[in-house]
Image 1 (cartoon, rainbow, N blue to C red):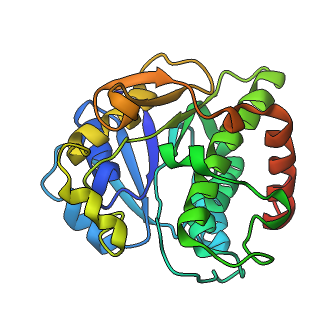
Image 2: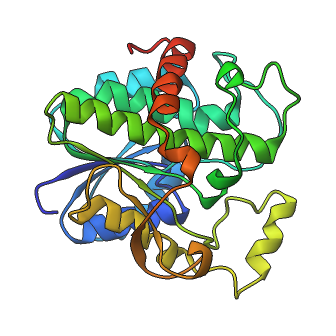
Length: 274
């Protein structure tokens, strides 16, 4: 990765920080796009590598646009890693659902804005919970339905899978060498659910792996010669734990017609060029 520039969101902790550490260790120039810059600077202090910490609140589309506008030069890899899970209903500065904005709307806008600068690939983090999602294209922002924090998370992660599918179709149609790749960490022991009842999973060691192993699919997706729209996750039972393997997302995540409709709906909702 020497000489390559990687932009990674959510790099102040968890699998994002591990990925940042390891990519920097093998030569990448790491741009940490984070909400809490002081925390991120403390996290990388003393690590070997080349780090540039910049502010980005991926849930705030004004912040996303400002960050993208500040970027100059080529970006080899964009890693959409920032995410939240099972949080109470809340709205962003633009009035969007915070959970969906963090996990999907923000990455959608950021990727589209940075795409002209990208040379290699986009890696976006999903979850095996996307398999349980019931995506509502006419209510992506949870206005018509009663908000359900877990269902919102599942839907946002299915949206990520479909986003990758449509993005890859568009890249192929344009003759672009850039790839879109999806990675999921399995069940990793991070701070993602420490605030909720789901934190019980972190007390079941036979179901979870440590954060270093949880980062492996992300690192594999960011560095290996994987095909466009690959879905990378652990190779263990139910893809909970293990080492990286190219797997298959849910059937719902492989529907090109829904992926195209989702893209159009998201572009309209976020004010992004379709």
